[in-house]
Image (spheres, rainbow, N blue to C red):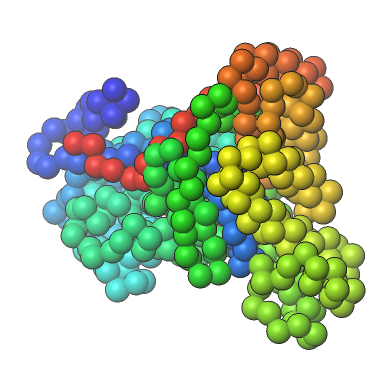
Length: 389
Ligand code: GLA
């Protein structure tokens, strides 16, 4: 069991006395609906069975002592519930610190510190939301440890709040929501304008979900992410001079085509086009899935990628290579980049009998073209956060 190793590490570093809790929060993959969540559109993500394990114990003083088995070389990083500000030297611990800070901002001040050891089996920087997983996990631990009266949906919102206001990434709600609300075997059809959601079963008897990880680190991704968001806001402001809407997600295809010329900036118009079309694709894709029409669902995944490549411009040669090589393989039902883009990974639905060939062929074509290897994961859809022991 993975968690037993994390518990062992905790005891080795912090000792074995007192009440120690063992927790898990998943990572997530988005099937379709990309860059729609901060545009008031729909998303369709699911939680995975890989994620972040955490072992924690409350302290009597104000100290925070954090250790990650993914960054052994950093050792124990200390801070305090009395000094919650983002610091470069705090490295990854800015995520749990941010959540503790966000609880305080929401009127739930954390008065005591904790010892915490984390281990994530989500590939780092892969775009499967390792940071949102740490955020939701931290919130879940705080609720368990201090008895705060918050729902899982609140944990998602607090996680997003901390990421926006403590860690400076203007992300939408998708990642934290998918993680906090995850349900085994189901994806979550979420309307980000209202937070109304519905679980849709993903029944893949003859196929698997394969994640192809480009191993290209995001690097400048976060600033580009904020830039895309700002471009969509500019497009919306121009549209609002003519149409009465609160978000790009409120427009249909036809309405967008009717009004698009009021967006007097080619780049902003392309970004808005993606946001509107992707939202409509997502609504259609869920309909297709409900009708057991996996082929059409896959086709919409492919169209999503093209739009992210050509109109939203967040793919890059690594993700394009993974997807274009995937499309060449018989037995691939759909393939697209997933997450923020600019590196990270792709998601593909692959028929069982084609999975080995997929990994071999896409892998070798990628290595030839890009010069380093991609990694492949056949994943399962799992539940939201849990306490394991
Ligand atoms: C990142 C963000 C999400 C979402 C996706 C793009 O994962 O954290 O809120 O915007 O990018 O769909």
